[in-house]
Length: 231
Length: 231
DNA sequence: CCATGTGAAAACTTTCACAGCG
DNA sequence: CGCTGTGAAAGTTTTCACATGG
Image (cartoon, rainbow over all chains, first blue to last red; front, side):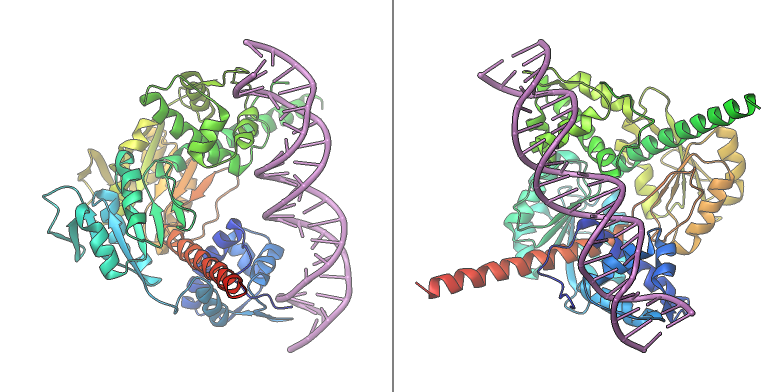
């Protein structure tokens, strides 16, 4: 039975992997690849082949038995799952600091149909200017502009101390989803999806894994030493 | 039995949540809080109280029954788990574009003991300059400088097309861990921990969740309409 | 004969329920 | 009496194994 996506709850992990598959498919299409097997896609993304097939089967049956998947076709299907073609997503960014500016200059994001139409800041020296051709407004104008321009996505790139207030204003303005880059836990109404990316947390996690890997390596070394001692 | 951390394999999700707890504990300490219960920490981070207790119990027993946890003490313990005090982590950044510059100016990262000591780029106009007081070198000097300075963490902030090559050079230089911000799947030896953050993937995931939430809302509306029609 | 698609088993994660301690 | 710490249950995700179709 072919499942139709949307209704059923797709796991977070699957959504995350699907985005990775899409990135790989884009890369492969540029490289001129025409077909690929689940095993190849698995090896490129670092998951198992069964996982790739299981993930894709949530959304439909895209492969040909004995052959694999058609790169261009699968890419189109996965793009559709992420809403490409349905509409172009209008975005705004709150906080025109170094991170905000870096996000606005990202070509990658634009490539997937996301488009910044406004930026907001509190600093009077920034208000009225343009960053990457995007006009910078006062935060006081946020609600009016988000409503008027039908902005779908709000990106929070302000310091932790203002993040909660910005999230509240975005929700009141009727934003459809939030991407939070401030190092602060934020509660939003359940109907407004929010994803948080905390860059400093990634550093902390990495340092944990480094210590963990090095401890494992030391323990293996002790095993080897013990074994050679018993020779 | 009190488990000692390090040896056992802690799940990725637990490591991630521990980093979030640490962020909250820092915030609470600044706010002057002295103790907190698992339920409070849970509510602040959006997980269940049992989850908080289960996560913490992997590393030890830090609470007092009937009272909860001492904020300052728990913060110290969690910091220790992430390697605070053990050493200060020397970092380098490869790719002095807008994202690289934004990462270098992040005060947050420095706060946790991470310290940039070198930046690398290919652009001759950037080589020899300083960004945020950090010297910019040619990528050709990477191996020498990483080895000489004992740099632990390499941050990849170059375009996707150069990411794999940069990762290879970092590994050859004996880097201990990698944080990859390039939208590219990279393979590194198993002994070198690597975390990848793909900003454009976060946008894609968010658009999936927005559509998913809005479809759910529409279906609920149909339910309500049907119910009122049957009155 | 090859590789997908998929039920079922295994592994893992979260929640539950409550014993035990301050 | 309240809240932690923790085995065990429930729930979820991943892997396995193989039927099915090009």
